[in-house]
Length: 202
Length: 254
Image 1 (spheres, rainbow over the protein chains, first blue to last red):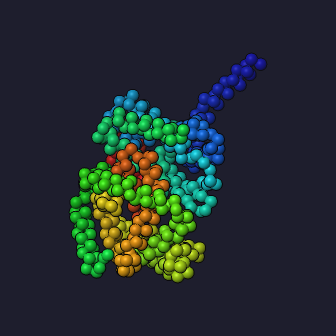
Image 2 (cartoon, chains in turn green, orange):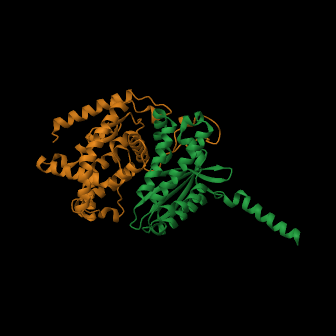
Image 3 (cartoon, each protein chain N blue to C red):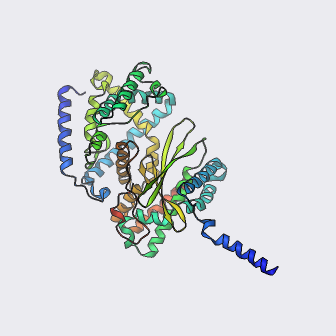
């Protein structure tokens, strides 16, 4: 009896602790579709959740779906290796907060949009999942997600919206700011952006 | 108002500018940093345009968007898209897209007639969908590099490769050749309507951009690339960002 109880507890701990329970999904498409269904839910309940509610609902989903540490490395380009560990961590943290704030602000209401997955392509070091967000009147915006395989599954490293790569855009801006004013200014500016999203949603 | 001699002059000017652009823009791996040799001038022009926009064009466009019902604005947009369509058709031809040339010619004829001078778009309903081509894209498909980035005062983001299209699209727009009593108010309407259609895009910029100049430059470049490849840019992939390598910056992403 006793042995069984330990066994069950042990198995439960194993399940909870195993990467599979928490990690991103096992295929690039599954990671993207899981994100999309969470976004749809958030949009549907957007009004009643409010900005704070949307942010706290999306935070675990986004942390699961995106490889924020990898993205942070890519958007800071050649400056990354020159930052000490503490600055790298501080940047990853504020960048993650800004991403959550941006999603909570943008996916705030529902107008019968739907997400469509259109296909998956092979890229160097990445898989590209091509999707679109389609409005009821047929107008659409394409969203292509690039995913890389990390230790705990497929995670998003870039979103290309109507041909504009978020990663390239941010890297151009961030490296420009670091280059002229330094990493502390960049971190301060990102913090200010997070604060302005909160203020705009009060 | 452009008369024939003026337009020849504009064309010659843009060609010479284009030549300068080709000669002065070596391709480097880190294009986003290296390919803006006129950044000092560009930032000034950007600042000038931004001031003009915030104090004049944007408020006017907001007012226009407020008083004009959505269907009317859609009609106005379709009308201007249609008069600009000869430029699209010409570039279909220059890019050797035969099927698209035929379909776009049909589209222009249908919308100009059945569509009441382009105010409506019956062509899309019968399968003649719209395409987006211009001279800059044509040069791109011919293999020409983008050339230096250029912010044109009043007009906005551009590049040496895209500059000649300003002249060609004007020359191929029938309204250019109508009496200026008609052309000027219509040109103003076109500008205001275009600006009104961009209100959402500029509010995204204002919200998201840390450095609006860089933000607009990168977005412009990427959208041009995307259009040149008709929505399927080749995309070179991603650096192996897991490893502690410091050369991630030299990579072109997507």
